[in-house]
Amino acid sequence: MSQLAPATSLHVDVRLTLDRFSLEARFSTTSRVTGVFGASGSGKTSLLETIAGLRRDARGIVRFGERGFHDTERGIFIRPERRGIGYVPQDGLLFPHLDVRGNLLAGSRRARAAGRDAEATMTTAIELLELGPLLKRGVGSLSGGERQRVALARALCSGPRILLLDEPLASLDLPLRRRLLPFLGRIRDEFRVPMLLVSHDPVEVVALCEDLLVLDRGQVVARGEPREVLSDPAVFSLADKEGFENILPCTIRENGDSTCRVVLLTSDDREAEVELVAEGKASPGERRMLGVPAHEIMVATERPRGLSARNIIPCRLSRIRPLGSLLLLTATIGEGLPLVTVEVTEATREELGLVENGPAFLVLKATSCRLYG
Image (cartoon, rainbow, N blue to C red; front, side, top):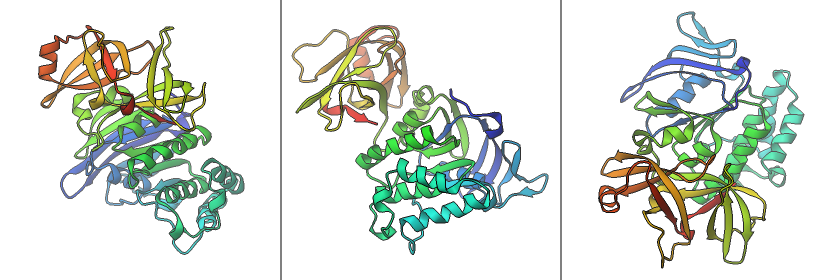
């Protein structure tokens, strides 16, 4: 897990009474990107608002490095604008009377007041989020994706010590969310600013986060490495309506007129190739992420023949756990690759004789696989 210096550690120990339950969160993190995952209404936004200073009625402690933002016992409460936090709410909240450049300059004023290099930060944010052609446009003329990129850039222009992102892509449709995912990755990689990312989308969490908290009715119910945490049936069921999607690192081998072939990146010299629908901008040798929904994967105990599905991958079933009326299979397909999660019925397990540590084959339709990044 990549960590930042101890001076950038975030410590939270807070309690906040909400309408239907009480938020009680206690954690510390030094990860570059810490995810906060959970179903809608689980207290994720309230947690971020407490850290940002927008919930003064919260009790407890919020500390970043050696600086205390909030400590009710010691009577400490730092106003939101003085915390050095870049906060991006779900709707972005751009200034409607300003054009894009004006919105970015509004953020830069906070950076100058804090003695930071506002001009260099603004230049980097514009380049990173590809905002050059939009600078003179009014925010009312922007698309949803453009508005979110501007909101992210404005937060970065303020020169934040920590960045809080409250489901920054949630208001967008699924294809647009996937197209904007690399922009969040660029922010993570180019800015040495710790981030707390709220999401109920497993793809965002796996692609971006190194550490993950799971909230359910205001309580932290799980914590750890995202792929491991999300494979827990209790957490798996909290995924949003699009369902859980496996994310696997891959390299483009060939991109033709109708199909694209990728190779999964193993560390044991095994090669697992996957064919999917052609990807217009993918070039051979380029590294990407392959997404495969858990409910779209079929399982076989013998190598199938005569199928329309294009991909048959040998695996070993490492775990079989109940998931409501279904079962959750966890499969290993190569050394160094993330585990693959599959949904099946109890009848499937009985008919096929599926057992833990037993060999099997994963069958993937080309039309079910997607490339990201």
